[in-house]
Image (cartoon, rainbow, N blue to C red; front, side, top):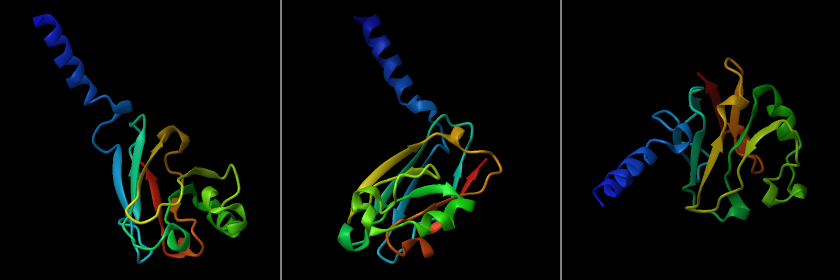
Amino acid sequence: MKNLTLFLIFLLSFSTFSYAGHHEGCEIDLEANGMMQYSTADITIDSSCSKFKINLTNTGQLDVNLAGHNVVISKKSDFNYLTSIVSPSHGIEAGYLPKDNKVIYKTKFLGPNETISLVVSPSKFTKGGEYMFWCSFLGHWGVMNGSVTIK
């Protein structure tokens, strides 16, 4: 019984540190508010992380159909093209974006007080590359955008 207890303690202590290579710097909490602002203008992803987690919370109070928020990650050079193809005709479930390989990652739109976690693979990015995160709700991307830096 003593060996089993020690084994369980070992497993529990290991599991708290083993989230897909998780260590400090492999996760960020990001808020999107009712003033069409993110809580930060820069997300830095440590390339030594095997996974990086973005925890997005919509702190705004408007219904998802009126002012939902999400996170889209793309190359900076693709931003103008991608925002030009945003259209309600693609549906709110698709973030108003058609399927396009220039979208590296995308979450669904969130309504008030909703949270979603987006797990990204740092290996999908190139060190020194220029990337952006932005909201694809109609017109939000003009002010709801920031840089993604890979270090």
